[in-house]
Structures are given as structure tokens and as C-alpha cells.
Image (cartoon, rainbow, N blue to C red):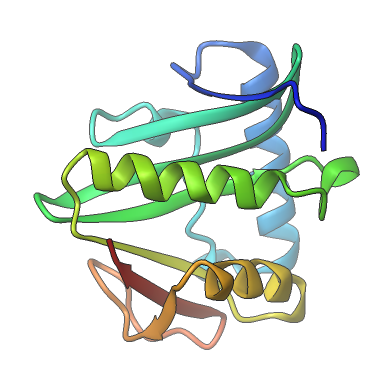
Length: 155
């Protein structure tokens, strides 16, 4: 992985991140039944309870991730994505480590997430396990769904 990777807070105003997130939503909708897609669109990601980061390799967008404040002590990981050509290159680990650190710095005591149960999402589940996330019951507004798994960890 390049030493030039930087992670920046993104205000989501750029056309590159808009296209990147549209591609993410398209992928999720092609894999998961509509009622089980929990990816947020650009307008939802711009809400004040969301902090969004982009990973840049020089001036090239290579990944993103966000947290959504659920309450004073609990946040949810959202919108984790790496560009297809950079998958398995360490960017997702770098982003997740950054998100965990920032969530703790912001005063959250717990991070939770929802991801898919399909084989496509196995690398994501393995990544979250590597960072100490454990499987849990649905949280916040989620409900049991055979297409979803829920994970959580204390900070």
C-alpha cells in the first residue's frame, strides 16, 4: 500500500465521492434484496449525526467510511467501501482503524454495524472480526433479517 494514503473528513460535496457512493449503492442493490439494503445515499450521509471520511491515495479516491451517532455513547459504522481495484490492499483496515480511533476520541463507548450475510460480504465480516467486532442482536431500528448480520464492539 502506498505511503501517500491519507484519510480526510469529507463534506460530500465533490463529484468523485458522489459517483463512488452511487456505485456503492448500485452494488448493494444488485446483491441484496431491496428491503435489506441499509446503505445510505448522499443526502442521508450529509445529516449532522454522520461523520464521513474519504481515503485518498494522492488525489485518487480509494475508499470511504463513516459513523452515525445513535446516542451519546453508541455509533454505527456506515458506508465502508474500497475501490474494486484496491480491494485487499489494506485500505479497509486503515479506514476501520481510523474510524475506531476517531469514534473513541469523540466519546463513544460502543461501535456497532450491519453488514450482509451473503458470501459476497465474507471479507467484510472477517475484517470486522479482526478488529474485535462480535456478532450481536439487531440494534437501533434494525430487525432480524436473514440477509443481515449485526456486529458490535466496546471502545
